[in-house]
Each structure stands twice: as structure tokens, then as C-alpha cells.
Image (cartoon, rainbow, N blue to C red):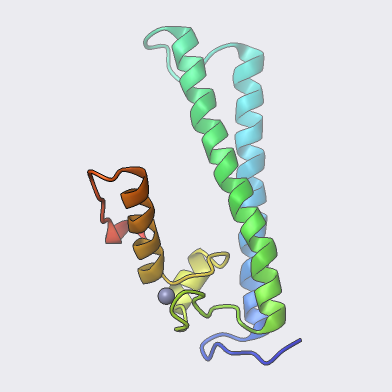
Length: 141
Ligand SMILES: [Zn+2]
């Protein structure tokens, strides 16, 4: 174990925040899983509007996307645990500043601060969509 760096949170608190985030992600994953199962078994989607096959496909696509998001976050939690061990948890990997407690409580798995996250996303969007760039600071919690 190395020296703890963040001044606003202790190692113990970081572990607790991470554990509760992990529990809620697992719950979310399970809820989505049961929902997917229900759709497949019942053969019907959320609403009765439109073509039922389209409806089922759309619902399954949306739920699968949510599942991938959950798994991604759970993977990041593994890395966040390593940062807790090494004492660098809560320190932005991009700018080296302390990540505010509010963000750590919502997204303890994120290795960067909201400012750097927005900047990274904007750069990714420039690569993906060279003609249009997006900037949504409000979405970066
Ligand atoms: Zn940063």
C-alpha cells in the first residue's frame, strides 16, 4: 500500500463508496437481465404501438446497450480498486488535480475529473465526426 493522496476522502471511505457503487451496478445489471429474459419469454415489447417485432428489437437493443454500460463500469471498478491500493484514487489521471467528492460519490470508477472527461469526449467526437463537434459540459457529472 502506498501513501494516500486525496485530502477530502479517506482510503476507508473510498472503499465504501466503491463497494456501494458496485452493488448498485450489479443490481442494475440483474434488473436489465430479468427484463431481457421477460421480453424473450413473453415475445412482446414495452408498448403495443407499431410493429411488435420492431418493438422487441428496439427494447432488446436498448437493454443490451445498458448492460454493456454496466459491464464497462464494473471493469473500471477493478481498476479503481487498484488506485485505492496505490493511494492515487480520486486524483485525475489526466490533470493530476483532486477529483471533487461529489463526482467521486456518483462515479467513483472514473479515473478523470469532469473537466478532463468532457475534453476527452470532445476529442473523441472530433475523431469520430470530423465535421461536427459536440460540447456538452452539463452531461459530464
Ligand atoms: Zn482532470
